[in-house]
Length: 257
Image 1 (cartoon, helix red, strand yellow):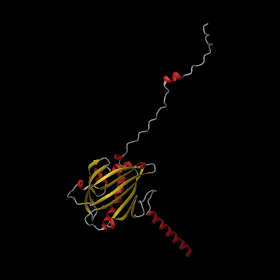
Image 2 (cartoon, rainbow, N blue to C red):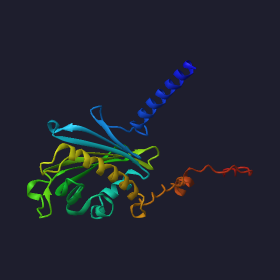
Image 3 (cartoon, rainbow, N blue to C red):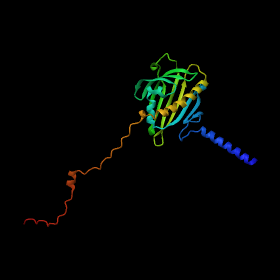
Image 4 (cartoon, rainbow, N blue to C red):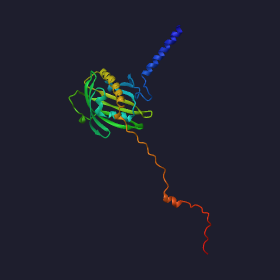
């Protein structure tokens, strides 16, 4: 009886250890933070949120990741449809494109973040780049001071930079979405407030992004099939000049004497 109880307890320990390992592990190959400096702080559905100390430990940098059932180019269309952010992005009150310059966009955004952060606004500059294998990267940072919009709508965020990375999974019909961000909302808030806000914002944001990308308005145009090139036909002039005459059964006409 004692030996049997010991085996049961050992099995329970193994099962619990495996469950804990799976709970902290990404659900698909290729997922996970860039290095081991990140700590997993939350997993909700498909979203995994990691954090690490930044700026001498005064701030937490966030790294969130999920999978989306749409190609990278389709997810990118959602992220660059700035005016619709308030329709799906949590805590977003206003987003508008200020200026477009090639692959760079100047964007103003106003947020109503969870307590105790509150109202925040900022002007950021998005820069898009194309990566190998159909992937995209959308980096952002605060706009230069001369380009920042001022408003009486809260606290202007003193630091906000990061990047979205969109990588194709398998046949390219799905996307591995990674979002890395370092934000100081200002207002002399304690560090626990940053961590609490990140824990609420990122799972909702990435989940909503995946749902938004499935809307028909973001469907990609169909890829036209490559036309078949017909086999080259022989040049009739060339064919007649190189044709060999058919043999004749008639005897050759003798030459005159």
